[in-house]
Amino acid sequence: MTNTQLAQLVIRLGLGINMLMHGLVRIPKLSAFVTKTGAGFASTILPAILTNAFLYTLPFVEFASGVLILLGGQFSRWGYFIGGLTIAALLFGTTLKEDWQSAGTQLIYVIAFYLALRGLDDRGRR
Image 1 (tube, helix red, strand yellow):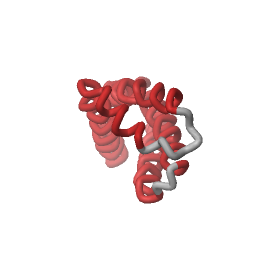
Image 2 (spheres, one colour; image 1 turned 120 degrees about the horizontal axis):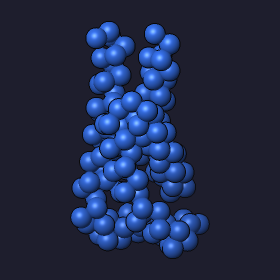
Image 3 (cartoon, rainbow, N blue to C red; image 1 turned 180 degrees about the vertical axis):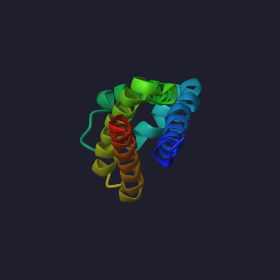
């Protein structure tokens, strides 16, 4: 394996496990997750129904993204894309709440998804 292939494997495993587990641990306690997280958006312009709808679907999207990433091949491409879109949506909500510390962490995810997708392009050229 080349260094590029090893790097791609490392980022695939890291992001895949991270996204998979974000969803997996939230699904069994979905109502509690929605109630707790949704409360943080009460002072924003987002209507509760929209916030709750997003939060009820979020763990399943995270789980699916993680599975796709871990499967590899063309599946990982779509997993990275879905994961990146998910982080973008989370970043919107986080900045709306003016939670800049969490926004900074989420930007790290944006960079990781970008690098993972770019790594797939690099792999395809060799």
